[in-house]
Length: 281
Length: 322
Image 1 (cartoon, chains in turn blue, green):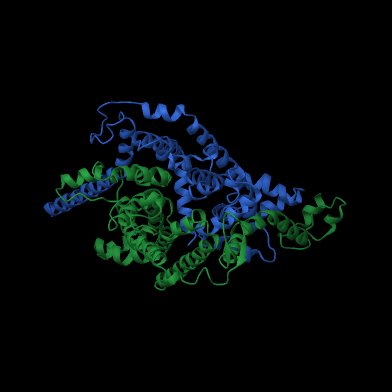
Image 2 (cartoon, chains in turn orange, cyan; image 1 turned 30 degrees about the vertical axis):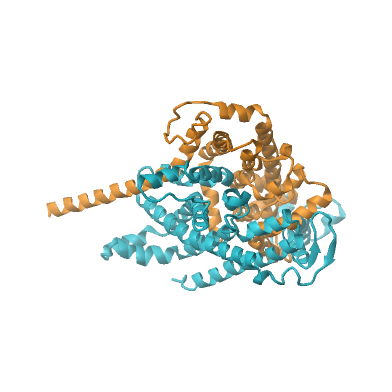
């Protein structure tokens, strides 16, 4: 009896070790490209194809060159401006729409909501054509307005905020109504503060999405000065003659490391946001 | 005020009235007032949303029936000219095939790998958060940065993967330069980048399965494979449907990786082997300056994405009832 129990335990231990081994191999595969990027970015020019993980000739020239040209800081600034404006708008309007869909009854409500949800089925590849025509007519090419034009309200934001606002008790709103709070006041002073956790998810997701967006900004901009970070990064290797892999990897590192740090801080909200995507089905 | 409070009833009741302040609007029954407010709150943002999405979609449909040069902006009615010949044109058919191939490679790989990782993660106790973080990192990294890193590793003769080929003593592969390996190489990059997202979706789905089900099955003597087969799979069906649909749609729509990693300056080379429909639309609209044709291709693409999401949903939900 005793030996059977210990055999069972030993088998369990082997399974446990196997699990961790598999996960570690996978984890290494995930981590390695980042290490390779960092390592290459610190290698002296011409030693990029050296296969050692630690640079044989350590150099920060690639970073110095990128940062001294001033373009990269400009792209950072552009991206921060665009992401902030878009996120502020998404936060406000998605919350207001989510609140209205959750707390009011009116004709056409369900139809409107279904339309909003079904908009995600329209591929962006189709929309960029009319979007481009529109901003060309408005003279918004190479402006922040042009980059921002399609991203002031998102389906994801409306969906998440509606989910959350539905949980605010009606009795609370009625009590406030009797105390003379206006309908907008109900949203602004009661529902919005209560919805702070959901709002955080929307804000973080939107900021992240705009930061990493590429397809639309690359069409809406032609001038280096108004590039967002991703557009600039995508053209990094053609800005200089020949392939500058150290510079490219340094650029990739500068574009991704801040977001990874951001992720470490807001891991909880990001994971929550992904599982909310899962609810949509 | 005290009187108001006394008559307070649930909000649907038309007798519940806000204390009037003498404005004409305030004399209207409360229920009607609220409907008006709802429309006021929604009007501007909803119209914007309609214009940016559905308005733009209709515009794309209408451009597809026009001769529309991007530069001159001269537009004339073209009837079906933009569509005619599309399906007998080699480049278009190749793009269609590539788009489907990309999804055929990517969807099963992503679903199997991320489901496996999610099951492993769900069954361990220590370091769960750490591993989850590792797998999830590419989700927050931009596709452009990832594409550069992989392009560097895929480099012929000098790249890291060439060294791996040498180490394994297999012939060197020109991953992105060979028409046969280019599309799978880009798809592999995109699989690497998206595993974490789908792992999280599966983890959320697994957490929703009541632990009592597993306990009951263990009491009845079900082995781990049986428990997986009879509890996890059927109860995870909804999540599986969702993940597959999301993954299929995002595969069809992959743009950045292909644009960044394909030969011929990102236009779907070598020999059109990685030219997908999104790349073709982009090229027609912004480099060949033929908006009408680009719109026509985008309409076809739209129906493919739509059909994929509708069909997929139907097939997989048929057995979802338990």
